[in-house]
Length: 157
Ligand code: BTN
Image (cartoon, rainbow, N blue to C red; front, side):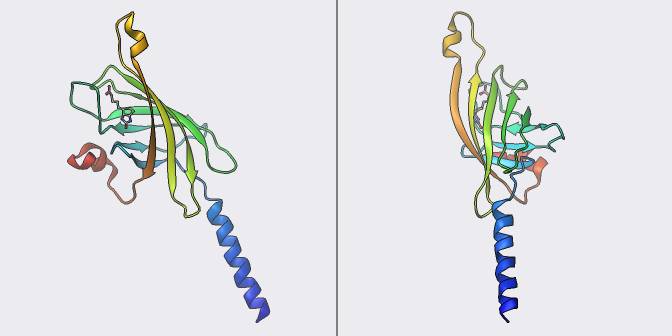
């Protein structure tokens, strides 16, 4: 009986350990607090990745379109890697945004991406000083959605 209880306790502790050791995976569909969505494709062996970003907000006059993103991440032991990516908004805007951040997993296994970004608008000299905005975004993983419909369809915002 005591052996059985010890085994159950050991098993419980092992699962807790596994839970806290869950690695944060960038691949997937994410949404931030503005309602913007991004799809990150498979992260390659060298840490590089690409994907698509559908912003919910824009400074541009032209209608919002999905934009390509390219980035790279670290592979750290703890599985809470830092990363960076660039979004080129060329299909509807002259701006470029760079994001840097870290992927965190909490004790319940929920993943978030804490990011900070710089957005450079196209300016005419000597007005370069006013052309950069800075901000933060937190992304949560979206589960159980069709990725293509979600980024391209009406439900994207
Ligand atoms: C533009 O307006 O010129 C392009 C779109 C920029 C959208 C920005 S990028 C930082 C912030 N986070 C978002 O999800 N959207 C805005």
